[in-house]
Amino acid sequence: GEAPILIRIETKAGHGGGKPVSKQIDELADIYAFLFRALKIE
Image 1: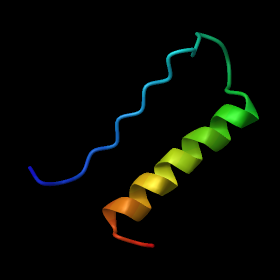
Image 2 (image 1 turned 90 degrees about the vertical axis):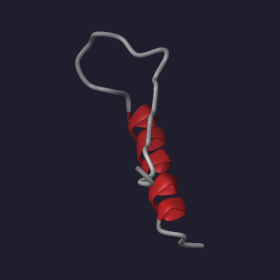
Image 3 (image 1 turned 60 degrees about the vertical axis):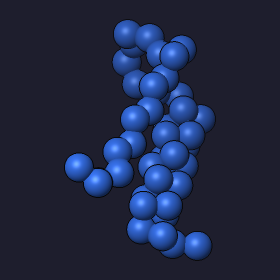
């Protein structure tokens, strides 16, 4: 379809518990950037 899709691949992720705060911030920033672009928010 026409709906936008967010695909995020973390190449240096492991099989441990929890993510470092910096990785959580990076992920959230990517999500917000995707939403802003998809919703045409400037």
